[in-house]
Length: 418
Image (cartoon, rainbow, N blue to C red; front, top):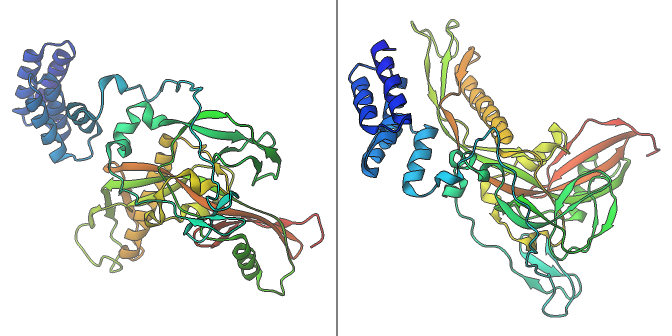
């Protein structure tokens, strides 16, 4: 670190904060001529963008910063301000986000009624759309989902504003008084049995709250009949003494993150294994695992969470209430910022596993400072919840509503006979 550059940088930043742009540019440009460290150089260029007289000059400094550090959050936010993708009044203190205003407005609703006979229509678990329970009439639903990358999905910009703590939309929700679970309801639902505790309710109209709006969902593809058949097969076939005490479906909230940047790694030499005999320990960079899903509900065990987190972006469609014509959807209980921390840890672990396979067992050191969360989406994923008794044991099973794969919690002795 250059001491001369440091002193000039301090003076330049102080002048910029005081509003003296000419003096700020004088000291900051002088600092750049003093062989500054990489960190000092980036800091000087960011503050030169603040002290610039013209937007074009500020843009040049910011683009220069991003050329050396494409993940720099301050430069990305500043450039978003210049582009009009972010407004200064939107920026908040992330440690003290303001509360979202209450909204008593009533959302326009749509009844899912069969146009042929007037009967109720429900989403059919075959990926084809709505189907009438009485006459069998079908109606298509859904459209093409856009790839993430819009300004609304930018993670760095979202955390700078209230959008990072909740993009509000008036939605119909319901709280289970027995277990506390909160659900997002389609307009057609007039009664509900909680998929967790089996408490039954009739739903009153006009129950509105503010939520982060789900952008997409994975349509339910597994029917109840198929679930029961899969449970029997999972338990060992027809000869297994299987009793299903509870079976219900629910859409669960999942944060879907796209990771960017790189993971820096180095390996300690260990003979002739893995990387081979080298004078210097091998090191390099590796792109992180690109897509990470984090369940935003705390009601499943770590083993069961895979039923919702094993989701591929290609399985998603744009969110439409019609998909919830049969099943409720739980609202998120994990904040975006907390979920992002879990996503970073999982991405680092998954990238480390990939590198370890290449290293042949050598000890690796990983650094995640240059790994970033690029975009995020809140999506809904269908899951079947089953409580079964098998061989004098009680087992809670979660089955993916898209693949039917079962994920079970640890079994416990049953208090009831099988």
